[in-house]
Image (cartoon, rainbow, N blue to C red; front, side, top):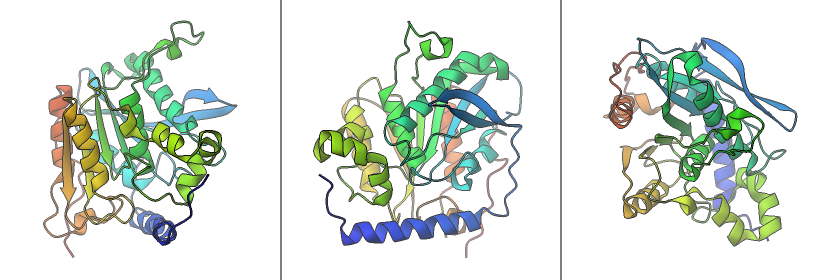
Length: 311
């Protein structure tokens, strides 16, 4: 049974529409040109799954960063600015960056998009040599809906199928690090809005609400085998309560997994306006530092980071 739509839920729906419009306007002037775009990493249900590639600076074996866009599970693409912005400073730091597209709800509800993210990990692990990349150093970087997907794929760590005809599907989908931006860790702790209903209603109808929310919540899959996590979000996010990050952090630390949080004081949903906040932390620099340390990489930090311009 679907739970009744609360006033908070209706507010959240309206807020998300405003957030999407503001984020689009904030990034409308950005020019972000991939080295290659529309690369096919798989096909599912007759749909080609594609991604954009941003070539890393420097030589040697590069860690792989997979960017997963947001958009309320129903919208967005590989060039969505709030998440794709990370390519601006990760590629110069020596990361082979791939920003992926995935199937969207409601036509493709949970768990289709989770499977697509896992497919991207398997594909890049299998084909890493094409881009002088390291199949043993893969990090997921997702925001909003993409942050949920990063949480989920990172915690599930799907095994490969040794009997699969496609050699890509024989690869495992485990990653070595996860970075999430303003991401949900549990559907049971935040009122369901229209976007989440589009994602989860078929599962809710099949299994009942409590069981469905548990199955689709990343925090359910926390284990001591999880990779290190870094969570970044504002404490004034209109959609994701800060407790979504602290709850996941507590669960991970309870089983001995490293999890850090970068708090953006007065930060809203999306990275678009963070650089205008007074005393905003240098989250991009801290993020790359954390990734470098976690993945044993020594890429330079600084190029491509948006200049601060406090209002």
